[in-house]
Image 1 (tube, rainbow, N blue to C red):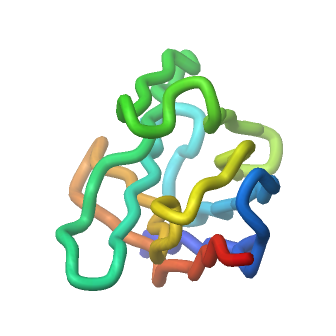
Image 2 (cartoon, rainbow, N blue to C red):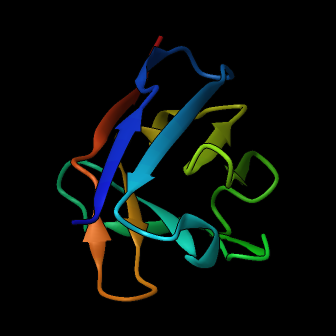
Length: 114
């Protein structure tokens, strides 16, 4: 079965950086588009970034220029490098793939606080 496991979250000060990882199994990873979403307290889950199989990337306007999505097909892993973090980036971040079916990781907390 498809499994997505996020890691790398935590507490960071405004202006700081974090890198999230999502390890995938149960899929032919290189053929799958991968997404990051996030959900802040009291808000709906929102799209953050997407990377296709050929590594075409798309970003939400709110993170463009600060976040970078990338993938390592040899490790079946997608990354989200988050720089210049802001208070409003605080959320649970989810890894997702929707190429064949819709699969989600368990989510990982990112807290931006001074």
